[in-house]
Amino acid sequence: MEPSYLLPPLILHPFADAAASIEVLEGAKDASRLLGGETADSPSEALRDKLLAGRYAELRMLLFVGKDVFRWIGQCLDFAAREPRLRGRSLVEQSFAELLIGHTPPDVGVKLRRWGVTDYVRIFSRSIGIYVQFQGPPAQEILGPDYLRNYYRYADYAYSCWKEETQFPTLSSEEFSFVLYASGEYSKLLEDQWQR
Image (cartoon, rainbow, N blue to C red; front, side, top):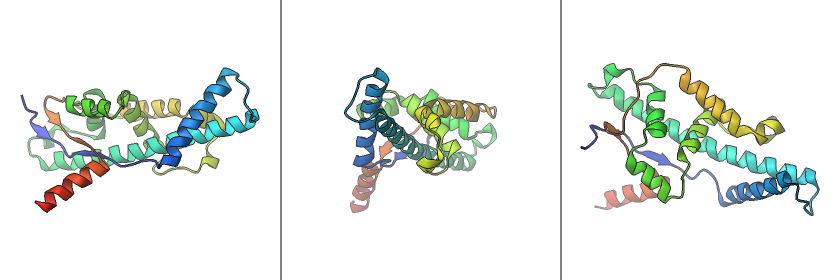
């Protein structure tokens, strides 16, 4: 059975350049050395700095994913407000976030796994948790080392608080669907449509 409603597409923009991605990987390697007690050529303070820089890069990437998710949620709310059969259902931001995270349409899950994103539930929930804390990237200097080392815990908690701040109706992937695009993929699709 086809879903009753096709929501706007979720478009994920590039959220880090190659340097930031490398920084994240280097931070992860350094963190494992630091936590494993392995000695390195660099002093441990330098390793800690690399770990924090890597964590900060991860936080920034997730914040931009959160920005894309909230842009999509806003478009979904606009769609629901214009659809007569949905107006009385009291849909809120959390309804659409739960569709994305807890009731992911099968096609979206398949595409994410094809992209190599297996733990998308955690990525999307943390991206929301970070975005509700920071609407834009905070300067690394204002974030304490403990926060940066454990930002994912704060993100998880912020997501839980945000999700539980209101009662909301849940949406099922049997009734609602949407398409997921990388921004370059979506731009190419639009370009192809314009050329026809």
